[in-house]
Length: 124
Image 1: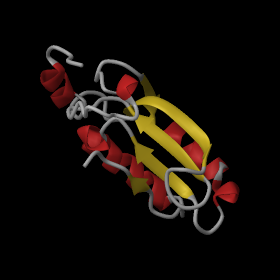
Image 2: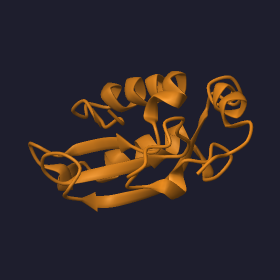
Image 3: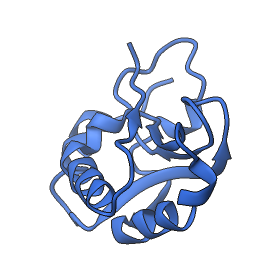
Image 4: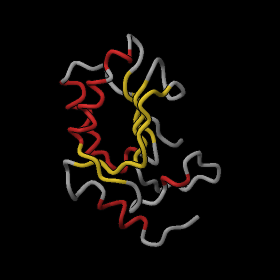
């Protein structure tokens, strides 16, 4: 699977529109992506193109939906009671670090609301 100009577009993910995160999908009651009950944010875009990728539809950096970071944080706050002691937010992908500056903004807002630090899953 190859997307022409993918690397050029990936570089733009951190520059434009710092208040929005490009996501593929959102799972609000995840039990497989970390301990406890989790809200899983699947980000859009990945440069690795792994042969056995679990989420190949999240590779294209132009796909997905732009979502306000503040809205994601508000959703997490509303779900806090479901997380319990072990749960929280997992950011998966795609490749989360393609949007690292936006992800930093998201995590700072998330932690400032008294929520436990999130888990970030990356391709290895």
